[in-house]
Image (cartoon, rainbow, N blue to C red; front, side, top):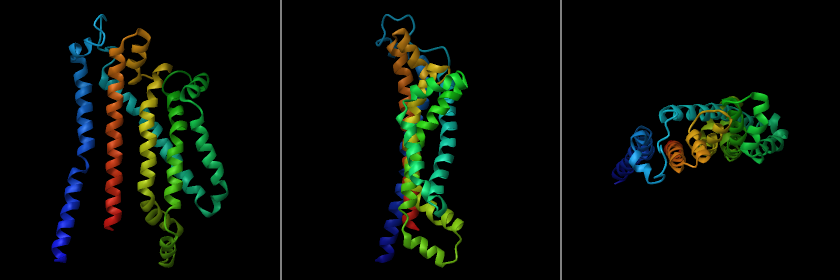
Length: 261
């Protein structure tokens, strides 16, 4: 009877894992269809702007805008994750605990400045283009990662760490083999929030010469063409849904691994 129950339980986990990646795959396929299909959907968008001479944004291919958008968000995410996780680890160690309030306040400070203000301050120093929007995304996306890294590491049971020390593990081994794996779902939740927010925020880069999916939105606002705005916003929304569901699946998978081990 126990063996049968175990098999049913294992089968249930297997089914869950089989369907775990279906949602991000669905949104990803829909995103690809949208990027490839919009240039041929003149009749679909014509009802939004029946009097416009042109209703499909054609200054740059949508796949090129998408790749530039992903590049900006990806670079900002890599730097922000590295800095945020490293800062969270540093201030939860014995030598760095005195700096914990300072790090938390500095991370919070980044979100008190609107991205538009950060761009306005960064352009005179960094010039027009990609660098100002990357700087804005880094400042804006730091708080969720730092906050969740702190929360995840602080929630690790002290008895577990004590048991690891009793087994002869070094502080570095405890961090990499015990604390970070247990805190990973919470840290991933912070990364998920940061990246999802920055996907939308990155569109502001079009105002300072950083070509991305914000281009059709800005062009639509300037020219009064709602079809352009919808095209840019639709692809950004699908991109956000794809990556958000991907992170959700990663969190679920990690929790399953922790519960099974």
